[in-house]
Amino acid sequence: MAVLAAVPPLRRASAASSSSGSPDNVNLATAFTASTPTTNVLDRGPSMGPVLIKIVSTIGATPTVTVAVEGSADGTNWLPVAYATSAVPETPTVATFAITTATTTYVIVRPNVPVRYIRLNLSANTNVTLTVDAWPF
Image (cartoon, rainbow, N blue to C red; front, side):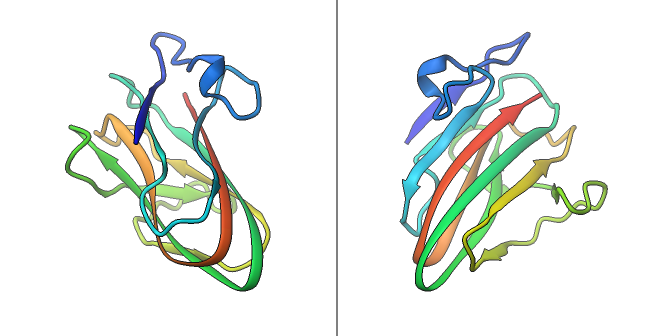
C-alpha cells in the first residue's frame, strides 16, 4: 500500500501519482481486480474538505464487486465514511454498494469527515477491473 499525499494548501499530488497526467488527482488503483483495499491511500493531510472519487469499471462474465468507502485517522484503523453519489449529492450514506456493469461511478466523500486517509475496500470481486482516482478539495 502506498500513501499518496495531497499537499496543502492546494492539496495537490505529484504528477507521478496521477494516472491521467493531471496533478490534481491521486490514483488509488489501476487495473485492480482484487477483493482487498485499493493499492494506494489518499492522505488529505489536515484538510477536511470533500473528496471526489471516480471509479471506472470494466467487466467480464457474471461481474460483481462490493465497494466500501473507508477512512482512517491514523492509517491503521479503518471505518466507513459518509459519502454521496453524484446522482444525489446531498444525501449521505455509509452503506456499501455493488458494481455489476461497465460504468463510471462518482462518489463524493462529504466535507468535515474527520479522517486523514481515504481508500476503497473491495470485496466479493468477480470479473470486475477497476481504476480509481480521487480529487481532494
